[in-house]
Length: 332
Image 1 (tube, rainbow, N blue to C red):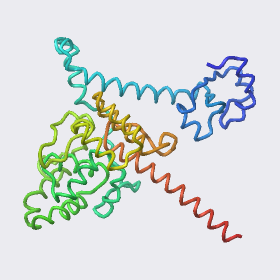
Image 2: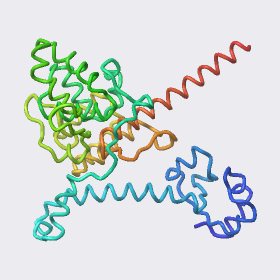
Image 3: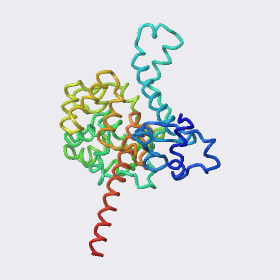
Image 4: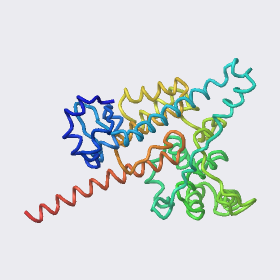
């Protein structure tokens, strides 16, 4: 906490910040001095005073920083607890053992189903261009589909429900898969063997349940891919050599950044490795107001939504700058 002497020294600076307390409330307002990287949202919206790498944040606004740190710490702790659930001593504990064992297969967060009205829907026409925003597990399924022109059962479920969660309608889903599958089979064969499962996935057949996309825990704890299969989590199911080669092929970050991702994989932290991957390929995302990082590393669709918002903000800003330059040229 900032002491009274320090607070008085920067009094005028603190009072000049938008949304600052009134001069009468200032003396009773507590301020905290935190590294600016922990207050990027406040920094980006100019809601705090910066000095020598530190942000001066009033108590009323410190909650968002504490909440973010708590979420991060909790996520890491849950992953570590799940990874240690095979410890013999824990297994013998009849009360805690079952709880930790089931922790890795439970997910209580949002389903991350896209709101089509907000223009987030995927179509058969734009899905290929949206691969850059897919997490590695889904981009690998997409690559496998484009290469083999088919996906086996687990891959169809994992990728199909992801596409559904990203806003792809049943009709577009069918069109996209049919376009690829019919490169190695007839349309009649596709309709006979695969159309029903797509309709079932969208709640139009069988018990007509609306299935939600797989979360990371379900994918990580699921069966590993076999020959000719592309489902699963690369950070969990790929060996380090293949994963390293893939990250290099995709030009993911620098050598040091890729090593940081691989270290998390070596330590058994697949979801943290995935979250690190997002951080590396989306520099500055935490400071973009429209990007929510909640769920990144916990749900593929959270990654996808955050990535699309990131590129929308980034490219939208670029377009605005370009338009302003054109206006200046015309006025000149």
